[in-house]
Length: 355
Image (spheres, rainbow, N blue to C red):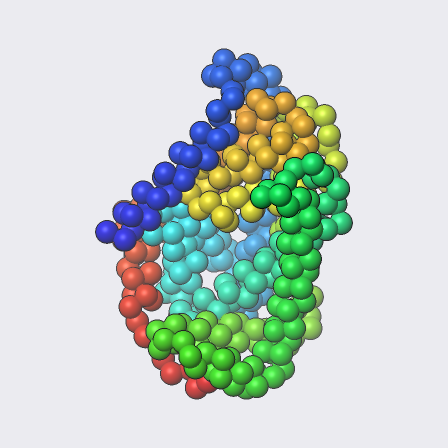
């Protein structure tokens, strides 16, 4: 029942976001826009998307080394199936990824999952830095006349960007302290968590324990350097994926500023508006960035969003299904496994974390 309700809410959000995106564009205009696309540029965009997943595999391999040395060829299957799992009904792709890796290579679920937590934290730090660049350094690109409840939107965005800068500093400090002062950090968290209900405290202790486990790799400066390098490369490829499409649609502005703005707005929308496969929220983010802020033709922004979403979706689904069938699995069993893994985690009390 809970999964059905979540799926229904996601579908309703997607419908609302798609209505917002398509409300001023006719079908004839869309068809004409699609006919004008230079398809030769779509293939490099797909290639860059594939390359970003390859880069993710190399980063995950490094993060898993404290537990076991795994050949890069064995990383791809759980990685791609896990990412595809994020758009399945249970949306438990990260849990599924850890489960599949642990099952195939004898790594504990806690170990595999802790590596994913650290991976996601590096992604979050880079994304927050992009927020700072767009909302603080380049805040002038936003309309100074636009207000919300009498407050300048530009000022609100600048304030949010400064908060992101503080958050980056806080996260980096937390990582440093957890790596080198683990017992002290756990003591402080246990003290602050005392007023919380037992269930919440246990989940916090569990997550901190898992994160501390994954952070041990950071003590190795060589490994840390590689993680930073691959994390930066992953996001550079993510941004670069849109660049060939700027030529496919012959956009007026093909600047780095526009690319970073597009990346940030898409990330913001798919985060605050969770939908199945990011449909609708992704498209709305593209529309806001390219049309509302950068002034590209509305129909161009709408068709750009559809094509870029489809290119990413094809890679995600195609890559996931390739490894599902290669490993002799079925989509039905995958959905069942995903749901079981998530349900087991939600109902299993974390072991004593000795905090």
